[in-house]
Amino acid sequence: MEERELPGVPPVPAVPAAPLPETEVETQVEHQFDELEVDAPRVGIVMGSKSDMPVMEKAKTELDERGILSEVRVMSAHRDPDLVTQYAKNARSRGLRVIIAGAGLAAALPGVVAAHTDLPVIGVPLTSSTSVAGGLDALLAIAQMPPGVPVACVGVGGARNAAVLAAKILDA
Ligand code: RP5
Image (cartoon, rainbow, N blue to C red; front, side, top):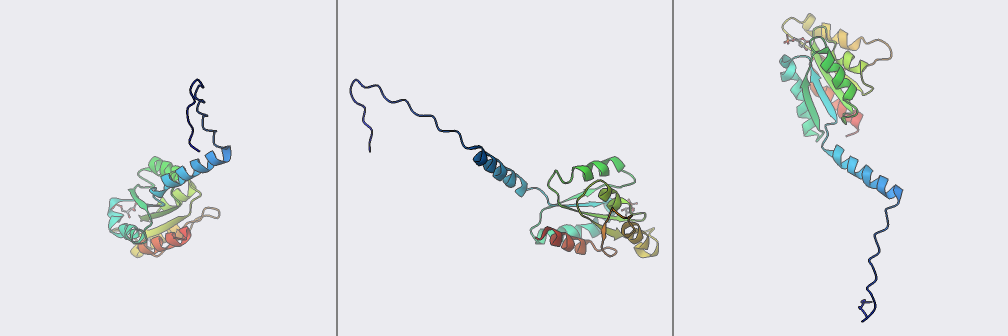
């Protein structure tokens, strides 16, 4: 019914909107976080050297084709140990859910990343000009992790398979 002002009767003051119940506020905040995470990479692709990029970008291509957001970083476990530590420690809080790490020679990167995060780490053994037995050195360095600190290990140069495995882990 339409409200009319009566002569001599002061207008009724507007009633302030009732505060939202606490649970509703929490739900709204959760939705806002969900939206924030939509654009955050889910998979981190790291490698020990720029020279690893031609192989490791195959992981990025595979994830892109599946619509899975990822980021690519170059960092060496031996040359940039502090950077690797910080990256791995912050990975979960930044929204990453799987890390793919490629390295050649004494391929410490996947294991060092796994030592600093509880996210699943997939190691990609790589070859370089000074590799032993076509990458067997890196394959063993990545696969032979001590009990309690596992790294999943794909075949030598298996960047694409690493991405397929990451997608399965993400159920995406
Ligand atoms: C590893 O040493 C890298 O992952 C790369 O596969 C290999 C050679 O690195 P560069 O000498 O090309 O930088 O740490």
